[in-house]
Amino acid sequence: MTVSQADFAGALLDATHPPPQGLRDGQGRPTGRRFDVYRNNVAVSLTEALLIGFPVTTRLLGEANMRGLAGIFLRRCPPSSPLMMFYGDGFPAFLGEMEQLSHLGYLPDVARLELAIRRAYHAADAAPIDPAALAPAAPAALLEARMRFAPAMRLVRSAWPIFDIWRFNMEPDAPKPRAIAQDVLVTRPEFDPAPAPLPSGGADWIAALQAGATIAEALETTRSAAPGFDPTETLTLLIRGGAITALT
Amino acid sequence: MNHATTPEAALPKAAGVGYKPQHYAQIISDSGTVRWLEIHAENYMGDGGRPIAQLRHLSERFAISVHGIGLSIGGEGPLDQDHLARLKHLLDWLQPASFSEHLAWSTHGAQFLNDLLPLPYTNATLTRVADHIDQLQDTLSRQMLLENPSIYLAFAESTWSEPDFLREIARRTGCGLLLDVNNVFVSATNLGFSPTGYIDAFPLEAVGEIHLGGHDEQTDDHGAPLLIDNHGREVADPVWALLDDTLSRTGPLPILIEWDNDVPEWPLLEAEAARATAALAACRERTAA
Image 1 (cartoon, one colour):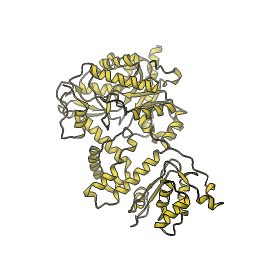
Image 2 (tube, each protein chain N blue to C red):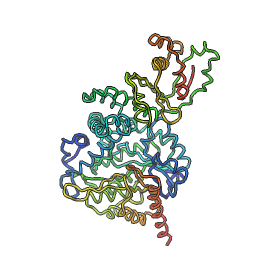
Image 3 (cartoon, each protein chain N blue to C red):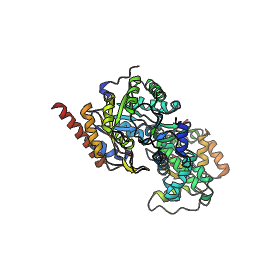
């Protein structure tokens, strides 16, 4: 009696599925709960990976609820690669589909921010430009330039106060979240990702620059939706985060 | 193909520990008797950032062993070429003293199951595992060590004992073996065979590294002991005794302490390494006597 890995894997992820025939204990008897050791290893290790990867989401849900949701998610979306540091790409969308969580509208975006922070942590290193290159010695020439960004930089846009919520759950004495929409810029000055809320229009401007627009073109695009947008604050965040790697 | 590693690149016949980032500062300032470090390959397959920077720094001071947990050498399907390429990239820049993987599978189709799953020991699985190791050693241009698993159940279809299976794989592929003494004790208890009998039958001449780790004790449906290899506590006393027994036959070898869950403060992990160092010293004294 042979046991295929398809049978084994199927029974691992589905506890209602009996263990495959052809497995034995040391006395030649059926395996019984011995098979559950493997089931447990799989479920617990994947659940732990999600709890570690989404600490704020876990705090918002409560650990018991998070474990329950992780148990559903890991069966629906087991990892597709052995790089557990990236497991959970589909978790924010999964949270958004759960009807019982619809009263926590911000939750998927908070989970997206946590994914962005995790991706930033493992992104390739890149040397930032000397901020002097951005000094307005020749503003006209600067306006025609394009920016390249560090691989660690991420934008997370939201209609919810996701930065305030993130900080309130990560930092002692952080202020209570305000009822505002927040776009968040994630940079990695050295090794620790640093999320920061962007002013209105900031995410549009960075997104246009990411798409290859010149600084002037990106300003024009941004100001069509956010008239009077001043890039100074956004630029300061980018420089402080070491996110600009070249002007071309 | 001959994949002999140069002697100066080999792991020291001393104690090492599984590296945990929370111990970084203490390891750099005073590593005690710990002479080498083992990392899980998959944790260092990101593109950059702190994990890679720390590993570069550690590799300037310590011999490094890269221990893969995701290649699924015992899988029915082909080796994951993307994963193999990532592994090759890591080994190429790091040039570690050793690379090891498991006699187990963890990937099925597109799913990675994040556990070291067992396989039956038959002529067919032997050929498959040996083919995967040939492919791996050719791609990496180095010899690998293959580790014996901890197991909780047996396959009715198996026709080989585990030591004989491993001996034949080592003979066919030229790979070395990583003997996890805790795994021997766990599997022996779980399946009711003698751990010393297993060591007697094991191809000890192929062993390039020893692993030790803690296990948890449960019981099965019939009330029989069921040990769980959880790497979550100190190495059990009977496992230390089995280590002494093994070293008396092999002579000194690189010995690793694995502690992956409920990771302790550095002094406790270092104390386990010091115990392994003492076991090696006792082994050397016996040999000299």
